[in-house]
Image (cartoon, rainbow, N blue to C red; front, side, top):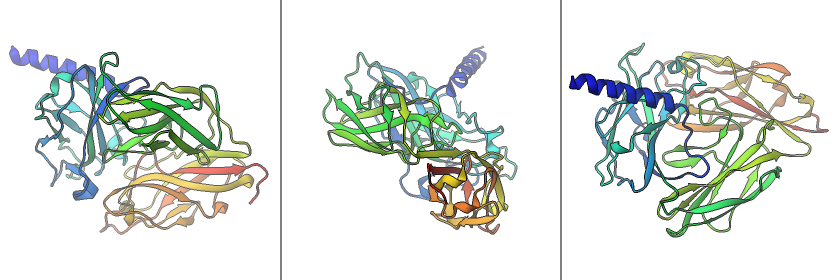
Length: 412
């Protein structure tokens, strides 16, 4: 009877968590929280933890942190996950010996998601009661043993524990964005400013975030969201950071895509005690750049198992703008082990050779030197094959995005 009861409770808990997982998108304006980062700075696979397969880590990993649970309201864990070996499924995490929690897949990646290379940052809410305030916390991860070529493996670059607090009870930093203001226009050279202070001591850092449509380095296929993510515990691909007052960041929007909906801005204020406050959002911002337009060409027909050792792979993208006025373009994507890449081709023409390290994560933003390879409507982009005895480059979802700058009155 005890087993039946416990199994039923576990099933209900997992069902509730599964139903909430994909609705979580990390902190929202007004939240107060701490982030406890676990990651490997060096070592195997560029500082990754191998889960599953022949050399996977299958033991609990101790955490050095003492969690601050005073006035805590909820907790979640964020996982820096690379698919690594296509066909790998069933990633799960266990915290302090409690029930295994399934790690959600990104809903915008076609099912089954394990057929498509990806680097994502899933977030899972966890019960506060599972965490220990006095230290001695640990986690363990596993994947399913089911695999089409008998080597299931995910790479984990970080596991972050985020604890939220009751803002009315927890002394925390405060502040607000003072420039721009709600309803303002954002130009090509925008100045962002934030006021910040804390009862706990000096301000350590202010990170400016934007909610708008842009390239999807987050890997989940959501082009319109709060744009930022973490790698080895460091915030990346946000608008910018500053650590000294006055808290001002210059935002060059010359490669931000045109926006058909209003934008929002917020800031993460971190004090010397490690408390973080996400400011209220400045809303209804309009991107206005006279004479400049930027088109984001989103990839589609993205191939499964996009690893260049598996031969030539190709995707499509559409161009709606007038190429007579195009002045520059970029190729943007994330990959793993790009040091093995051998060429990118657009409409049959080689436009790029190679860049980046082997056996590591890499974020690419490559200028397209010859705009004549582009054509109105449907375009085909391909990666060249590398020898099968080499690892090859993995192209992560959503594929290779193309940005095109247009200038009114300009011609090629």
